Image (tube, rainbow, N blue to C red; front, side):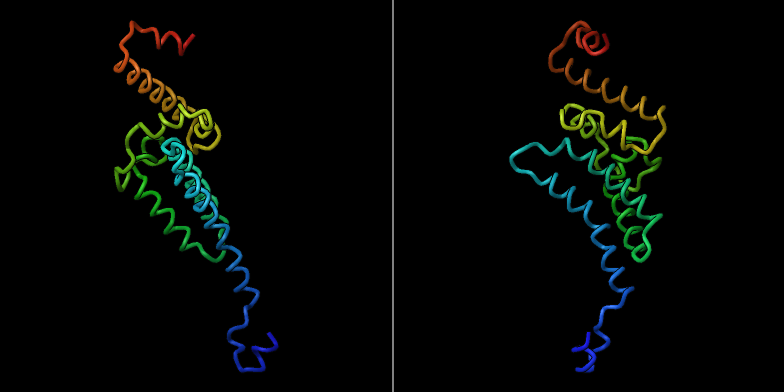
Length: 166
């Protein structure tokens, strides 16, 4: 700071406010870095990461909209972008009513998460910001879709349904 003042560059000195603004940015961007790392694997399947990552980002951005002091506009834009890009998925899981975009609308994403032992329904039970009734309906819908898909590949006489619900 002293050197900047002496060389008449005091306008470059980082103020307490500037420092606080800079400190807030990693908190906003870190969840996106984690989601990117998780979903860009080339040695493992990543489709099962999509639903938990999108819901996690939605939750983080929702909390940050309330608590962000300096970068509220950035958080709002990120939330709008997330809702536009993944509107279909957020509608399928009950977070949105009317998506701007039907991207990722297929049930394959929640189905993949359920079938991955790393995720199962943890994202639904612990992270999904909807009512218990919506969670129960979604759980039933995803299980039914998995059973229907399995039976279309290997037709049975209801054995899968009995296996899952004993």
